[in-house]
Length: 283
Picture (cartoon, rainbow, N blue to C red):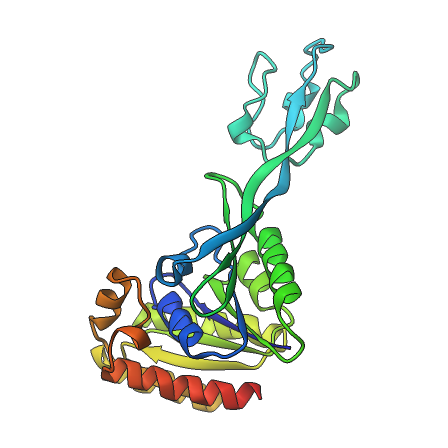
C-alpha cells in the first residue's frame, strides 16, 4: 500500500484542485479528504454517501444538582467557562476536566459528545473517506487519524491512498502526513508563499517523510519561481513541476469536474506530467 499526501503552508494554493486531478488519473486508489475543518474535495468528486458514523471527540463539563457553589471549579477554569453563578458556559468549555478534578462534591462530570461525522462515499474515480467537524469544534487531528484509518481499511494491498491534507503546519497536517510514503507541497511564487512552503517542508523533514514541491501559478512571478527552485535545489527537494495560472481551474470546479476532465489545456498537460513523475516516485 502506498500513500501520498498533498499539503500546503496555507489555504487557497490549489491543493484540492491538484488532488482532484490526481484522483482522476490514479488507478486502484482510495481518496481521503483530511481537511476536516473545511472539506472541499467533495465539491469536485461529487461523492454518493454510502455510510456514515458519528465521531465522538472532545468532552464538555456537565454540572449535577448536588452543588454547593463553593467556587473551586471556577478558580481553576482557565477558559472562563464557569460564571459567577457557577453555571457552565458550554460554548467556552475546552473539556480539560480540571473543574471535575477539584470539585469536592463530585458535582461535575465530563460528558463526551458528538463533534463530527465521518462519511464513506463512492465517486466516479473510486471510494472516498471524508469527514467534517461540527461548527466551533476542535481536535480535528484526532478526526484526521480516524479518516486515514478508514481509508486504509478500504485500500487493497497494492493500492494507493491519495490524501488531501489540511493547510498549515498544525496537528491536522501532522496527522495527515505521518507514516505516508511521500508528501507533495503545493507552493505559490510569492513572499508569503515561499515562507509557507519552507514551514511545510520543515514539518515533512522533521517526520522524515520524502517531500516534493509543485509550483502553482508559476507565471505570475517568475523571479519568485526561480527563488523557490533555487531553495529546493539547495535543500535537495525535487520540484516535480510548475503549473501555469489558468482560470480553467475555476471553470472546471464550477462544472464539478477535475481539470483533467474539463479540458486539454496547458494546465491539464502539466498536471499529467507531474502525476507521471509522482507515480514513478511511489512505484
